[in-house]
Length: 171
Image (tube, rainbow, N blue to C red; front, top):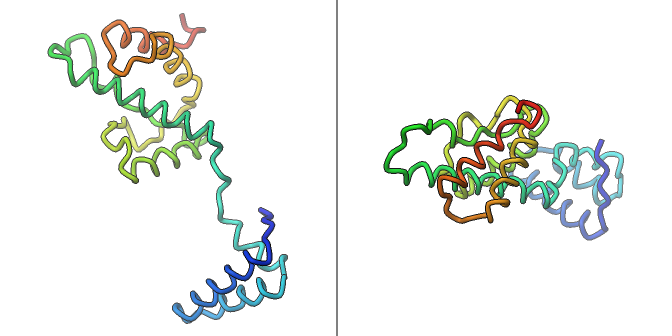
């Protein structure tokens, strides 16, 4: 179970909010939580925090934003090509993150898109790549940065990024 340390002010504010919720929803359980908060019964009120996810570290949030930004550049490059022969449209689709091991990254990417950011970055699926992706994206971002992190990709930038998708052990 998650343990959260609340100040007296935090407990008072939450107790007042739970009292209001109890009155609005006509639900005594909210009033009971408010009472536990006021009386300092931590072992009772601690359970209200069990559904909270951990705060996403800034480095992981920046990583997701960098990945989405890279796929935005890849898709812009593809869309601007007058002759798309030799490049398949699926090559520029964002595969997502792994639903089993990278769920917090999927959640953040979905929240970012829901807020209207990168919603135009087309995804191959429902943001679940069904495979680990972090190493792949690190290689792709490294290739992009090695090319000078251009805002607009040219063919050599695109080729370098696509070449980085092949795992070094598969070369």
